[in-house]
View (spheres, rainbow, N blue to C red):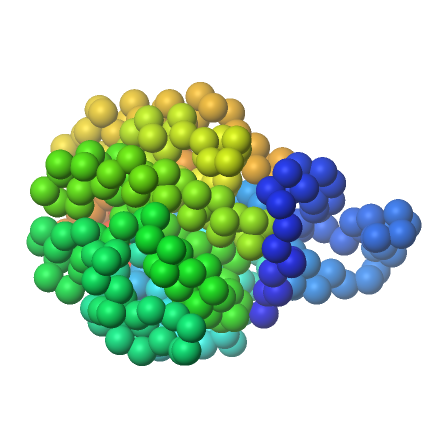
Length: 330
């Protein structure tokens, strides 16, 4: 199980964070080198940046539907799963198995911009927290097309407290290496947007919430899904560049059903920032939906186009649920 470092100001993160992630021989606190025959604990292997950037998989079903955990662990290097203990998809032991001794990275889905009514914390939270259902002040509007979700005001103090002190810690306790932030593109919405209106305070609240998450977990990975505009790419929070808080981004439906040039240009704009979290290249991933894990022709086209831009591709059967792992032969 990964243990987060104590919360500290973000400015401290730039000074001598983590000497290495995949090899023994890192300097100890005394400045002496670790003997090469001393095994490095798995808990010491995680850190900023993705040492191995591909292949990756996004899967939100239970562990038993992966087609074998050992097979998955030998096929992929990055896993995006739903590790919410209230859902019960994975045990900490199964997450450790996917890590394959520290070779792989496992991050968990965290719906930051919206709240789902099937989560246990929609109705049940410990004393001192406000549940999603009870926090009517935070709910902005229904999420069109998703009847079990509501957009959330990211500046709401009770919601931020719930995320930072309850939702995220439960995921960390499962042993994941970090978070995959979904629906945070809400910060790119305007205050008059009918599907998720977001005021200037809501926008800044979203950037601030991610900064606070980074301050709480300086050594964990943070990936943002669908970083689509200037608010995130050019934004700041407490004087800190928002992109510097991230280890990577992912974008859906870039090459299927038809190539989306705007999305490609957005990803290339992020690439041009030349970020190196933890001394590693910034991870830029694409996820396309091809209808079936048998549709290898469409998947191959998406993989080829994504790799040509230096991105890390994955093609899933469908966006809804992502309940199956596609083991493509390329």
